[in-house]
Length: 310
Image 1 (cartoon, rainbow, N blue to C red):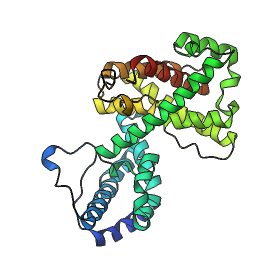
Image 2: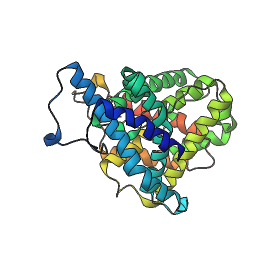
Image 3: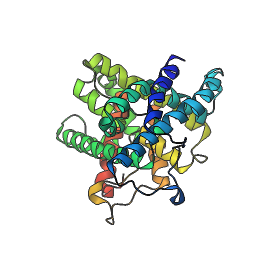
C-alpha cells in the first residue's frame, strides 16, 4: 500500500529524536501506567514525539495488517465493529502522510489538527479525545442556539415541529425538495457539517452539499447495522463514539460543569437520542438535510430544558 509505505518513511526520522516502545491508545492508561509529568522543554518534546511515534507504529504494525485482511472479505458480511475498524484505518491512512510531515516540520500545529480531526486515531489518548469533544460541544451549542433562534422568528417552521419523528416526516412530505443537501444554502450546509464534526471547507454549495449527503449516507449504513445488531452489546465508549458521530454530545457544557444541571448524559439518554436519529436517517422519505436540521433542533431543545446536559 502506497500510503503505508510512505508513512514508514516518515516514521523512520522520528526514531532519531526518541527511541520509545509502542503503546496502544485505544483506551486511557490506568493510574499505574501514568508517568511523571515531564518538567523541561526537552522532556516534553521527547514525550510528545514518543507518543505520536508510538501511535503511528500501532497503526502500521497492528492495524494495517488486520485492515488488509478484512478488506478481502465481502463488506456486507462484516460485523459493525469490523466495518467501523475498516473505515477508521482507511481514514487514518489518509491523514497519516500530512500528519507525519507536520509532526516533523511544524509540531506546534498538532493541537489544532487534533481539534480539526486531522490526526490518526492511534495517536490520540484520552485527554486528546476529551479536549476535542469539549471543543465540539462549544461549537454545537453555538450552532444549535443560532438555529433555534432563527426558526423561532420564522413564520414557516416552528422549531418544536422538528422535535418528534412524526412531525419531521410530515414536514418532509410537504417540503422535501427544500431540504435536499444540494438545495440548501452554503451557510446552512456549512453549519450542518460542522455540527456533525465534518470539515465544511469547500468552495461551492454543490461540493458542500455532496459532502453533507455522503456523510449522512455513511452514517445511514452504520445506522442499519446498529438497528440490526442493537445497542445493548455496545460498550459505553462505543455508545459515546456513536453518539458523537451523530451530533449528540457526550460531555457537559463548560459553563454548567459541576452544577446541579450539569450532569453528563446517561447511557439511557444517549441510546434514546441515537435511536431517534436512526429512525429519521433510515427513513427514505426524509431528506438528509432535514435529518440534520431536526437533530440540531432536538439538541437545542435538550440543552435548553436540561440545563446543558446534552
